[in-house]
Image (cartoon, rainbow over all chains, first blue to last red; front, top):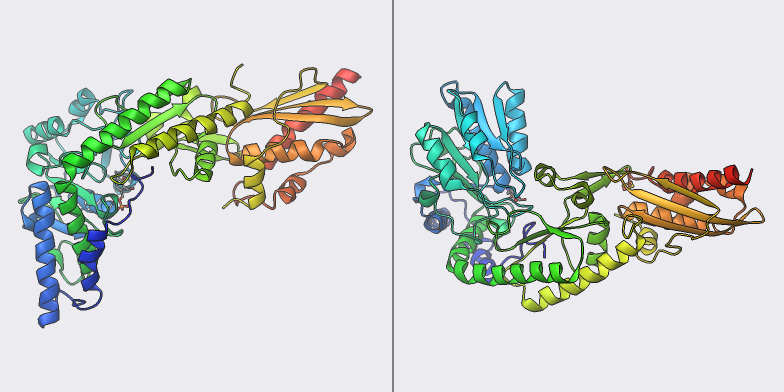
Length: 380
Length: 122
Ligand SMILES: Cc1ncc(COP(=O)(O)O)c(C=O)c1O
Ligand code: FES
């Protein structure tokens, strides 16, 4: 129930990777046959990843994951665009984007953080009004990792294009859940992470549309056409490419399956537990995301009791020294005080079943009843 | 990251509730940004005959509330007032770094309840 954090590696992915630890361990830069084998594997992987998102192989840069891809997209583009020093992003981005933007601010760049509405959708009016002469980049995530809200990427890319501004989207959570095609979305750059789609950890890619003026952030022996130096993680990249191929192949079946489980979980929680709210957009949300808040109880306590029943979830509530702090995403959604500290994210995966949903609903009822019996707020 | 004892205390807390005809009540916290701990006590012959708590909050807030209620129950008013953070932390086999001062929270609620009692009985 915590697939947005990470996913188990698919056995087919493991099978694809294994030879690259033993027989085919070559360095893709070596000229002998071991090296050629690795280089061939890389170019096949590049084609698989490109095909999965409707891109050309030359437009794929392999990285160490979603975080590095976000860094590369922002730090590789912004400082090098004719002195344009302004970036537009949203308040609910992943820290990989937010902290990179904060770093740019320290370097003297200007960043506008566009707010979202109560469902987590970026305010298009404010976004459009934020555009300036010197705006170099807009970066807005495809789907949010906490509340699952899907952003109107096509609309934003149209605005970016009209104003001659590069547009990057973090698609780490959307790949494998909803269609991701770089031309349909109209983006210039797009971040992907392998471990969220049943691939290995520590690998991912940044799609960079041909003609985009981007500079590397990692320098060295000019791997990845100089865009990302360092001996390639061949086994990881091969596994990632296999996972991408599967994600696209299984997309229709996966999304129908996950949507069914998601909607059943949400409606049964509403039916059986009182004082509940759904966080995020009611319909424009990832098929695998359920984020709900329960009045009178706190997130970490729920998480712990659920964990004891074998249900892994995450929460947007953190406690330190008596003060509860809601995540930046939940805070941006303007959720009422009584609800904001009692949030749970349940993120479904391919291998979950309706039986799991039954089990989780029961576990939730038990957990919440137990904590509410202890809460001085309940029944007041 | 939590000791076994913290988890045990959290998942099977004793003394949950509110004493109807309490001799003293202490409540600490706010809905806006904090945990809330309510402790009520029943005192007889200067002894805390019963101590009950209700807590809204994290694992530490609940487990320390339960620990404080257990530690205080059966003690004299003066003994209960003398309980320290260390007593609570030792009882729980330690708290994670950064949360080691949280035990004071439940203690404050207990002491507030005791003061409420001594004030009333004067
Ligand atoms: C939206 C989003 N972006 C970026 C990342 C970071 O990806 P990685 O773990 O591959 O660095 C994550 C994963 O937590 C994410 O959910
Ligand atoms: S009371 Fe929650 S961490 Fe201290």
